[in-house]
Structure formats: structure tokens, C-alpha cells
Image (tube, rainbow, N blue to C red):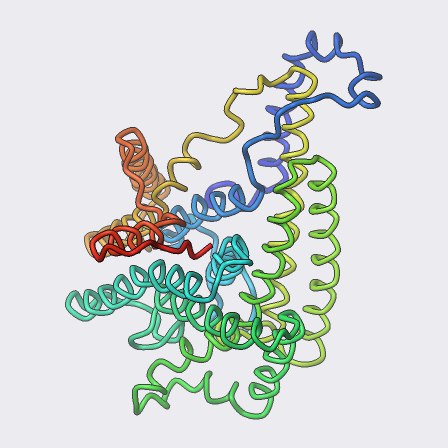
Length: 422
């Protein structure tokens, strides 16, 4: 994304050579494998404790924390930066990918049989820090006069508030409407997406792109507020996909990984074709407007990445079955595991460090050496903090049973028995 952005083939060839070197170093083990037994005789091996969805989220976190600062330097190629009105690039995928993966990893997908009260409490509790961070960011930008692009989310709105609002609204829709009326969530999402795209085509698009119309609170934050409507179909579809994938993965069978990879490929193909058709005949893809072409493109992208993650997990399981990896050998990078344990804290720290760097230096005039030095120090700092939190067993993730624990404590004080919510 930085120095090698102009030579992607050279970079890919470099990685390929390293990978082939690792395989060649294992040739003695590979030559002793009884391939007939491996392929045709089933073995009782423990399933790998890795979920493709989790690996996808960790990869997104790792790349996002680096890109949010790297984009401010000239070594970060401008074709990867966010587009103002129309078009798609690497940085345009960030918020869409976070919304999609939050839907896949949501309580509605993980625990579809839980009651409405549990799901609502869980969603509200996990969204509260995002809302607080969003308000804190708004106030800090005002105090420091930090330069930011108003056309991205609006004057007061921001990424954190967008994610929180989408989570809360979609949970309410799922609990109060979809589950009670028993309607198909994918069909309901399609209706919302078509309705919102119709509104964009009938004049809402002109309103969103008009920089002058910011006279009241709604118009001042029109991009952020309207983007929530566009992200609702993406989140609901992601919940449905996540529910299916979790049910499949709970069996621990390798064949389910193959089904998941094929499903991701089919979704990628269908949504990719639909996105291109919308882009050509309805409206150009636009992250700012969160139109149908953008939503379908994000769905296509993360479905492709999900298939790749499933294939990777299959390769790990295969290597364990033939003895190239031990059953207790770590199959995930340590850094990504540490980021997963405290993702919100690390992401917040990354935003604070990005702001500090931009306030203390002119990043757009920095040379290659200075840019790389700052990025290396920045990445090292985040890595050391994540390692430190993990080594000290500090985990800020929301526990799934936290509400049961709270109710149990309250009921004990009242002297009444508790009923589990799940």
C-alpha cells in the first residue's frame, strides 16, 4: 500500500518465493506422507480452534490501524485514498467491512435462539462505548480545531456513531419485527436497499452531494444519518450469513468448511455481478451515499475474503492431519490474537496516535524515510501495547454471559432464583 504500491507483481512474487522456500524446507516430511491414507482413510483429529470469521475480523483490524495513519503520507498512493463523491478504493471499504463483520459476529448470529431481551441488552451494552467514543471524538475535534473532511460523515457524525446506530437499529428490527412477524430477513433487506436506492435516484443523491445545505442539525450530518439507512440491509444480510456459518462450523467437520467456501464464492459472484449492473445502469458506486452498488460491492468483497479464510483453515487442518503441524501448535499470528482481545482499545489508541502525528507534523510533505520511520514507530507502539495487554491478561471484550452474571447477583441480593436468558 505504500512503497510497493507501484509494483504489486514484484511484491506478490517476493511473497511467493518465501512461501515456496518454506514448503521446500519441509520436503522430508512431505515425502514421508502416506497420501493414500490421508486422502481416503478418515482420521480422528481434533478440529482446529480457529474460525474464519474471527480471522477475517483480525485481518481487517490490523490493516485498518495501519492505513488510517499511512493515508496521510505521500508514500500512500492516492488511488487507495477515499473518494469524495463517486468511485471505490481501499479506504472506502473500511466502514462497510466493519458493518458487515459486526453483523456476522453479532449476538443475533451467534445466539439466534436467545430471547429478545438478552439480544437487546447485549447490543446496547456493546454499542455504548462506541457512542461515548463518538461523542468524545466530536468534542475533541472541536477543541483542537483538527482538520477533517466534513463530506465523509457530516459535521458532528463519525464512524463510531454510525456503527453503533446500525447495530442498535438492526437489533431492534430483528427482535421487534423480523422474528415476531417471521419474515425473511434477506428479502426485508432487499426491500430496504431498493427503497433507499429509489430515494437516492429521486433527488436524495443531489441533497447529499450539496455542500452548501447544512443549515440545521439533520442537514449538517446528512451523510452520516443517511448512510445508516444504507448500511441496514448490509448488516441484516450479514447476520443471516453469520447465523448459517456458525451453525455449520459448530459441527467441526471439514466438509462444512468446503460448503462455507463455496457459499462465499456464490455470494461473491452474484453480488459482484449485481454491483456492476447497478453501477452501470442505476447509479455509480458511492461510499458517501451508501448506494446499492456500494453495498453489493462490500458484500462481494468480504464474501471473497471469507472463502479465502475458509480455504486457509482447510489447509491448516490438512497440515495437522498429515503431521506438518502439531495439534497444539499455534495456527494464528500472535499479533492478530492480541489485537482481537482488545480490538476497541487498540483502535481507539490508533486514532489518538494518528491525531497526535497530524497535529505535530506536516505529514503530506514528509519524505520516504521520515514517513516510514513514523509508521514503523506507530506500528511498533500499537504492537507493544497489544502484547502488554495480552500478557497481563487484560481483556476488554464484552462477555456473552455478562448479563446473566449481573442478574444472578441482583437476584441473590433480592433472595429470588434466576432464570437464564439463553
